[in-house]
Image (cartoon, rainbow, N blue to C red; front, side, top):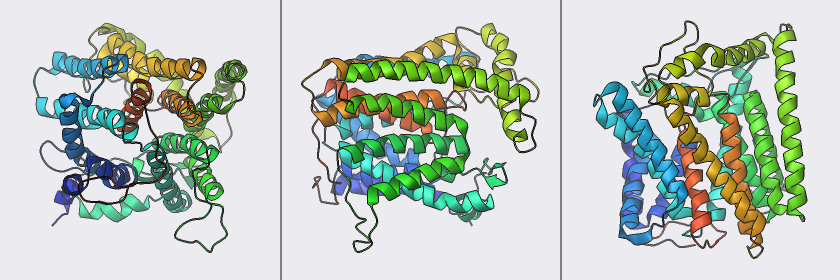
Length: 449
């Protein structure tokens, strides 16, 4: 007997909390922990959903009703996000007809549309900016602690503990580099883990700068530990344990972009950022070419092979992508190059699946919010300091994800997180946000701060 039906338990918990308290409470106390602490490889039901997809369903339905009742304010980001999702569906239907249409509808709904709606209607409108940022960072701090075991023994304790109780097959395994396990936590792959930790580091910087962390851990009030410093060290250790260069680069890029928001001279900081990023891009490009050409040591053999593989992907697949340049091949249908089944570059993969049209929509979906956030953050002089800092923080997070998915496909929990942050970004732009620094606690029929 398996525990497969328990995969749907988050939906029950969310529905109960939404009824007794609010969708905001359910989002903070159920959805975020399920998304960031539990694997998404265990599925159940028809259509088959994982725990965080079940968790988002009741919240998404409630918030969709709020949007219909007039709480939604449209934007260009809405057009780009829903345009990209609509094109994904249209491209798949062009390639496969209406085969498996329910799955093709529910997947973008629970992994993209609902997270985007949550990001837009919950965080800024309800004053939960700091509460969500702190909760996100703390959950990744817990993941980093758990990952010490995986790093040392090359065994993922979360999957090892849960896999015997579920019938769905876990496709992931811990990779080994330099004799250590590449920590993946509940996110399946080390690059996903590294990318999400990069987001947490950027958010941690924001919360720390404005002084919203408590000085001590509430559970250990008499222990003389500096909470912000301990959490930062834990997050950095979590990033290091992934042994993933792409997310490290993403964290640097995102951190540089986010830092403009707290600079005394924003324009000077912007110019400095451009110079640093251009110099860094040149260094990575030429250094990477030299590394692939000359990296012959035993210790770097696996890394060199990985770098060579990514370098060959675009060369081998670009002609295949251009055969179906408008519609794309559909999500499972592109011709596979022998030995290159895994497309470790989302921009290439989205071109294969959804054509150049899909690639343009995706890049615009990322680029437009970054430009808007930077534009408002640079030119509006009457913004509160914490709101300005959040605008640059969110632009840094989206930029970090844009860099990270150049080395991996956009999957796992990183996919809904992208749309959650896109919704959060749009809320900062189209609503007048307010801020409350505490986390909502359980209360009947309303949120108590």
